[in-house]
Image 1 (cartoon, protein in one colour):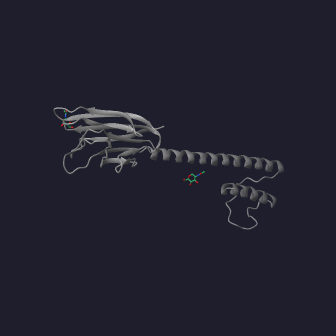
Image 2 (cartoon, rainbow, N blue to C red):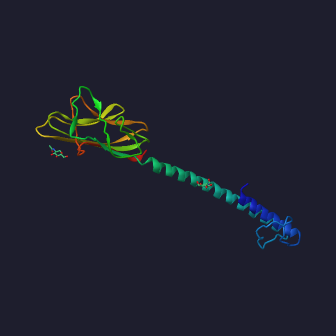
Image 3 (cartoon, helix red, strand yellow):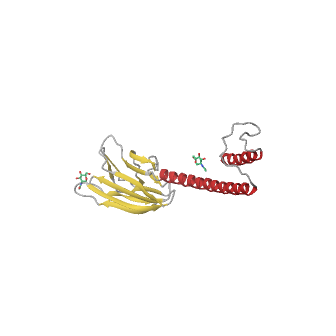
Length: 219
Ligand SMILES: *[C@@H]1O[C@H](CO)[C@@H](O)[C@H](O)[C@H]1NC(C)=O
Ligand SMILES: *[C@@H]1O[C@H](CO)[C@@H](O)[C@H](O)[C@H]1NC(C)=O
């Protein structure tokens, strides 16, 4: 029984007791109880009516408590969603001089080590892999800058499979190429940029090559 219900029933009981003892407001134990409402049942029908009202109040109270618990749960869910939704990263290369990565004999995952932002820590600097923390639609963008002596670009990989690519053949001057798309990802899906064998990208101090991703919304 909740405290509120107990107080209501106690009030009823003291009301009945005082009605029996001719309207005195003192309870037998003499404890400090809130003063009685000025209404005392003087007849059996009145008493029955009061009991019915009490029962109705009790039911209403239960309904309010249930509703309160539901609202609490809903609030907790919304707070969780709000926290889970904060996923965004932007990375580049941190270097002490302007260099190129590649061309290599084999494909490699680009390991960006300069972090502009990594809200939610879903991008791993160690592995170069973004792991979706929740199911949702994510948007990715990357921009590749490189000198023109080799083909330059990168492939956007999802769980080891190519989803898209940005590429430019070797050129008389330098190369800029970019790509961006939205993907529905399951929790745990992995997204990364792959540098194919023979390609290269610039890792210049000015951060001309970047990789970004954001959770657009949960699904
Ligand atoms: C609702 O949540 C608040 C704070 O988290 C807690 O104090 C209260 O007891 C909860 N009420 C119900 C009905 O669960
Ligand atoms: C590529 O972009 C860089 C700046 O990001 C610029 O300096 C360069 O001229 C661009 N190259 C070409 C071929 O447009």
